[in-house]
Length: 377
Image (tube, rainbow, N blue to C red; front, side, top):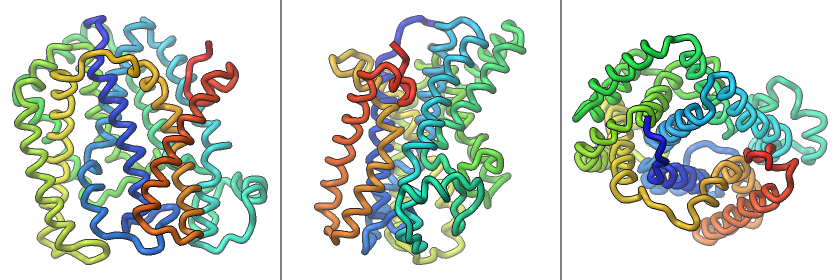
């Protein structure tokens, strides 16, 4: 394992979280179901949303796998690794569920189910019911499901590191490098994704942990490859060979995805023959784009900048708070009847400003830092 920090992977992580925030702003406008929606959803917004939909979360798991491997190398033991990751993930998760998340289901219940009570009443009387209210399970982790899944994958990695002899781990890693070398970096993970689709064609992600097995298989693949990129940095040479082809393949696959969405937009049902090619194209677009982005990060972004350290620290607090800011701001925009373009601009400004305020205040107060995902000073 190389001990040198790959700054391109830092920038990739920063960019992935930034895209996630922009994506959730888009959820206010797109015709898909969400906590709060503009009065007249816009069908065409689904096309730019689909440009990232198939790879944004898998990319986050890949860069998280890379970062987790780097942390394990720094700490030097499975126990210390689990303790560190648990503190950084579970403390902000619990804080988020109790404090940050409640406005989201409250607004959804008010706007879509006629809930008549204020936020304080909802939090005190209904939020901690540990059951369903009008079909919404409460309490909830909402967008923080990613933190839950990442923590579970961390435990799995720690178990392998603790119980599998180092010699066996090295053999498996070397074997994976041989499989992923050259064009294998494009072909093998995609083939695994396609196999999961073939075995579970009707599965929809639930983000509920225990009934989401196919999704775990889907996300564990990029998490493991991210880990391998850290412990076997020679894999970046494989990425370098094929990322340009991945970029072309990803764009071509997205062209088909966009064509389908353009012709059968919104709630218009597409013909049966479109369904499977559409899902295959999304997987092809997803993995090919991830390979292309890792290659671009390795070739062009592996350099420092005065903002990198701050942004790298800020992205997790941004992630914790951003969706609540979007939902609350969207609710007031909906009540005021604000049109689409000014709503988008207001949401971008309000979300960026609110995230920076949350991060800036939290990072300066020692006891708040662990609650927003930062290390205690």
